[in-house]
Length: 216
Image (tube, rainbow, N blue to C red; front, side):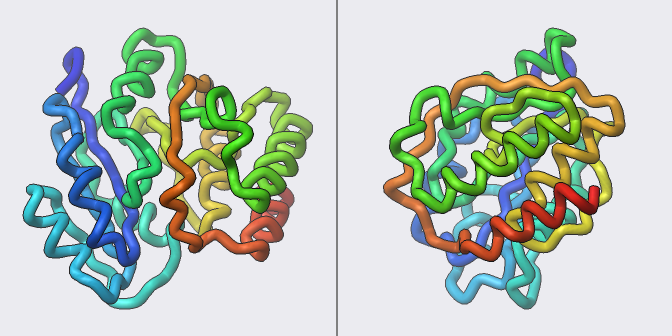
């Protein structure tokens, strides 16, 4: 608990047995609940997560990040929900940076922006997808968000929308729906380590982003 608010973390994971332990070992003590959604992993991701005290929800088949996030949301109890990846690209020690704008009443939805510190380190496909989605979201919603595809984010529970997306377009869907629900969005600078990119992101996900922008 932090400043009287329960904090939940949802971590979608797919074949991350080698990395997720390091992530979980750095979760701050004020976090009340850690939920790892094992998205049909073929390794022992679930067992490793359980050994660190996380609540594990296991999907029998790989269904995609959007489905994993949806299942995680069904089980959260916190006032504020933090989403982060399982592969070590997000630093758990920076979770507090995402929470304070919400705790201070400055925002309802906080995105950890990787562009501020790591613009030149991002894979090309990520740069293309973020360039397109950033411009189109600004046009659609009138908000200036520089890193719309960051999966490192904190959201007040009442602004968590029903998720329909299955894969990485979920970041776009959640942002659009939350803004339409009245959420105030803020970005804070965070670092991300792209050297551990796991390669699940594909060009077809860019097309899904565009579809989500039109649909929602």
